[in-house]
Image (cartoon, rainbow, N blue to C red; front, side, top):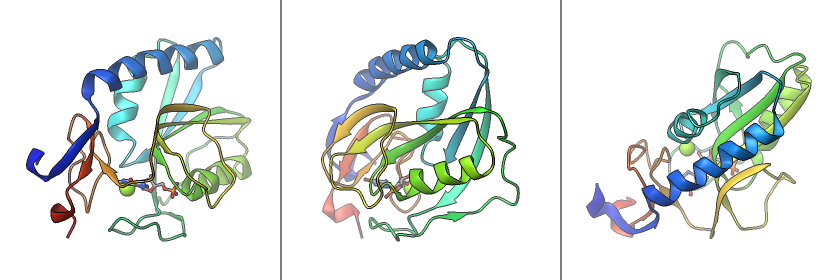
Length: 178
Ligand code: 5GP
Ligand code: MG
């Protein structure tokens, strides 16, 4: 797999250090409440697992399957909710975690749904945010790293289902993106 990577953008040690400080930010912002953390699968799985083990306050975890990318490296523009049942969020303080903020459509659509379902407050956290013009007006409350507008893999992020288990974030070689 390493042979498919053009360059490492953010290495493991740097990610881990940043997760420590993100966890402190979250603890500071939610000192009392039992947080309901919603992890967007599958991309945010690795990030969320590493981040949440650093948070000492009480929390519960739910997962949501949404599809915004249907393979390839381009966003489809439509967000589908794939789960048969939506988690019970009424009256809860929700922390929504995704791998990356790109066009903003995913976070925007999920945040809106959470509010429709009665969540008291919704905050959002992402490992990565692309510094670009977004299709939807949305900002994440917690951002691991800002990156340029290029397609990245690793640390949960995939290309056609692969590379999620790379311990760093990197840019694919053109020859690997077939
Ligand atoms: P948005 O809805 O903000 O356009 O995109 C969010 C989703 O698109 C992410 O959850 C992720 O699955 C996918 N995505 C956006 N940019 C990238 C990228 O650079 N690499 C990978 N692997 N997925 C991306
Ligand atoms: Mg994805």
